[in-house]
Each structure stands twice: as C-alpha cells, then as structure tokens.
Length: 225
Image 1 (cartoon, rainbow, N blue to C red):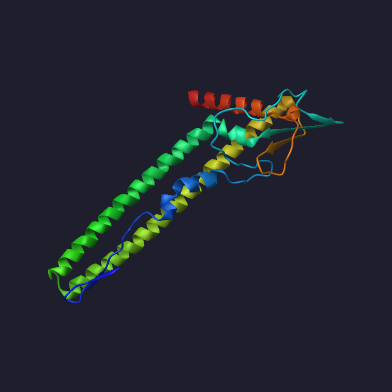
Image 2: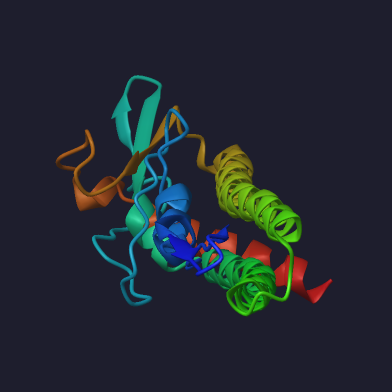
C-alpha cells in the first residue's frame, strides 16, 4: 500500500503479519514428525492417550510366525509413538523452538513497523525533503525484503530441525530393535500403521507392548545420566 501526501511523496508501507508459514508451525511440526522415511517404518503420529492398543503376547515363542527358520512379528507404530516418552519431549522442544523463532520475528517486525510509522509522520508533515523521503522509502524497501527473507529462513530452519528430530527417533527405534532381536531371533519385524500396507495382523504376532516398554526404559536410563 502506498500512502500519498500533499507533497506527492510516497512511501511503501507493509502490513506485516506472520504468514501461514509461521502461523501454521504446529502443522509443519506434526507433518514433518509424521513423515514416512524408512523402509520398515511408516510413521503416522497420533495424539491419542497413552494406552496400549491392538496388542497381544510379546514373547518370542508366541509372537512369531514360523515357516522353517522364518520368524516374523510386527508392532503398531501409532501406539509406539503415542506412548513413547521421547516423542512428547520432542514435541515440547519443537514448540519451544517455534515460540522462540516467532518471538524473534515479531520483535523485528514491530521495529520495522515503528520505522514505517515514523517515516510516514515525517513525510506527511513535510519534515523531510523529497530526496530524504525517497531515501527513507528505499531503506524501508530493503528492510521489507530482509524481513521476508528472514521469515522464509525461520520456516525452513524449523522444518529442517523437525526432519532431523524425526530421523533421530527412527534411528533410535532401529537401534533398539537390533538389540531386542538379539534375543527374540526374528527374521523380519514389520511395523503396522492405520492406512498402511498391512491391513490385518493376528494379535498373537504383535510385539507392540514389548517395544513400548523397551524404548521407554532406554529413554529413562538416558535421562537419568
């Protein structure tokens, strides 16, 4: 929007609000953390209560399909994520990070709007020359571009941090399964998620409860160090 004055000076005035990229950070967080990024894991994060769902016996004897030496089991990734203490910690960390970036951006935005209002006042009252008014307009135009760039930078930065957090959690699940399987002896361990490729699984082969218990025990140990 351009504000015209009687002296025919004009100055660019930007009405800065957080765009959808900053307003919808929680959606970005949830989308990033819920990405499917590994072959045997389909991460579909849910916000359900901490309860074990669709779980059956977890022993290696009863939770396996045997065909010769082939032993297969599966776990419900929705239940694992919604019951994993680390997942809640990551949510809190990302929310705090969002608040920090929004606060920093808002401070810069407010400072810019203050300079815009000051420039408008000077121009409307004829307190600056035409050359000075043009210089103010150019300066504010550069600041505007910097704000837009900063906004994009913050959005990309938060998204990248979310992707990294997601990969770290997936890696921890993988590492735990390797240790878990040293004694369980499964040939394959698959994940089940609502809407995924595995549409049915006998509860007898469901090891979800064991996985939840194990990863939370590991988390507790790490937190106590």
